[in-house]
Length: 123
Image (cartoon, rainbow, N blue to C red; front, side, top):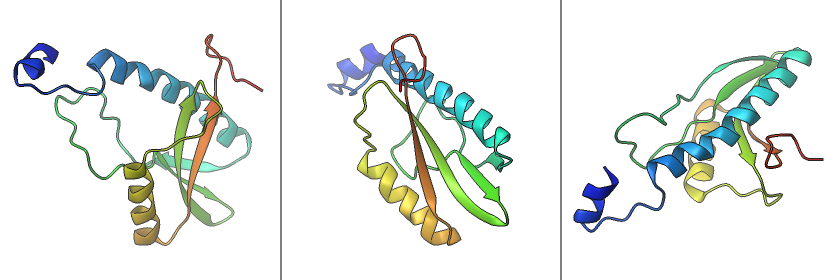
């Protein structure tokens, strides 16, 4: 598919492999995060859907990963896994999260986990 895009003079910023490789860090963050939520007695359910294997993923409204609830209070939560200690979120995602927050009148938390090259949480 990448070759066809090049033939059309379209250069994606990431190859399919690079795009999916980024999800490895997300998956590590999600695994560790859900473990902590469970330990702390925080209820959660899926909110956003995993689109990494869809053929076409248009830029648009990002959805946070979870709706969490604790002591009768709800919030949206999104996992971010990084190798760097620079906690960056793209503007499209931030704007989308703000829209979800306003729509449901609940806060959005973006939770970062920083991992070393072996996939272990950094201090």
